[in-house]
Length: 203
Image 1 (cartoon, rainbow, N blue to C red):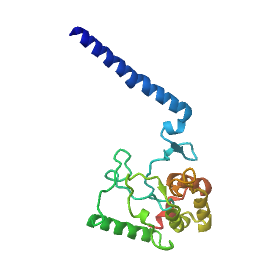
Image 2 (image 1 turned 180 degrees about the horizontal axis):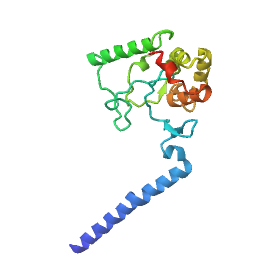
Image 3 (image 1 turned 180 degrees about the vertical axis):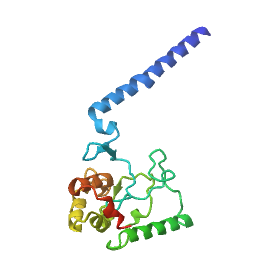
Image 4 (image 1 turned 30 degrees about the vertical axis):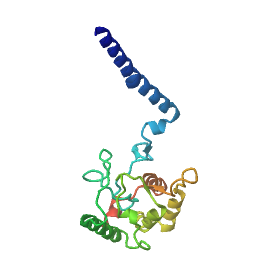
């Protein structure tokens, strides 16, 4: 009996050391050497060298001079990386219809010069609530608001959006997209940060 216990304890200890210590340290070390950016969260810095967020996690941009991401149902106030989720509202949900209508009204009010209908993704939250990307169409729809808030020609903002479009992965997977965080950082690099007073006039 005691011999069996010793064997079991030894097997447990070896398994714990190998799978709980050696393997994680080995994989983490390989990741740090081969993919340091991804291993550390794909963090992005602004023009001052400060961390602005992760390239893979959507965040809120409420100011008029910035592109806004998809709505988020992750957490109480949205964009909570520790509570990734969708709203779970069905297509017949009254709450979903009311929220979509309120979001549409807000978008139209803030961007009255926008062309055409509002892209659906600007009204509907993603499944994770943390989608960092928009379609090029959804980004371009916001151009008039951003151009007005920053006091620059809409054509210049539109050109910047086109330059930031990411193609399909390996040329065949997914759809063309724009990373909202990277696009907003590119805005600040090219046009500077918008003055808060100028944005306040639009509200």
